[in-house]
Length: 177
Length: 105
Image 1: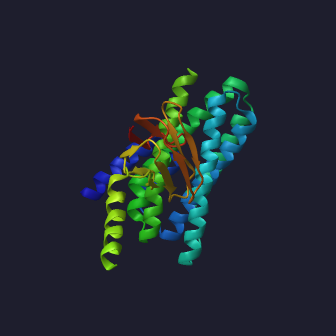
Image 2: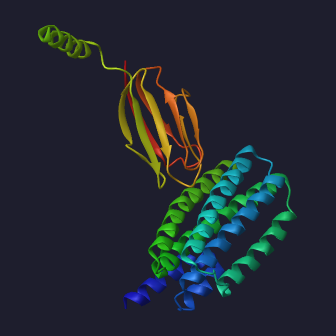
Image 3: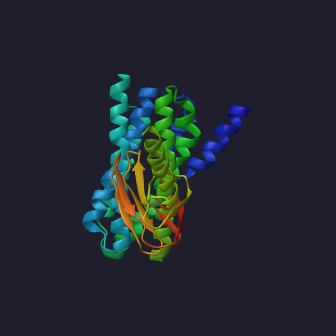
């Protein structure tokens, strides 16, 4: 019963992200090598989005936000790489990672067609939705599934910092209106 | 002779008690996106040393514009307090990190 409720809660939270919803409903608990791969992939996605924004963004606030994303996500991923090396774990590609990457590259193409204020708005809106989805997945799926204590702790730090990113993105989005 | 030495020693001890407390260095840690202690008392002339234990870059940025100290990952940096008052500060990159310095004259 408890499991069913948490699955329902996860589904509700992940609704904004079709990819993460699929993986949650797949019911299979991801393994540590898969979790590491998903977390790292999620970081790379936001780093690439930030690099695109650095080139295309018009607003000073949006540029600064993209810089913050780049700095923090690179730091988390660097830490993640150091951890998997230390634990002698090889991150394992999986359907969630693949679907996340596909969705993200589609988004990059979509955003690339926009310019100026339209780009700023679309980028920030996507950052809000993306962080919401990733934070939901961390909270309900990745953190509870992680076996290794250090991996769990890194994911928890990630969640804390990404919750700040979500707030920041929401704030920038409100300012752009 | 030993008596004179003792009185000199006593004078030295007493002198150090009369002289006002020297400016000190106060250490504040930033770890796991938390500044601790979040509230710290200090005096004008004291040095604040922020120690960033995170892998993330932080800043110690005062609301009143007095200081904006950069703290690269795993590094520390200092600032000497020049003015009295309650100074709120935060991290520009992670604004949920907030703290206060209570600076006595």
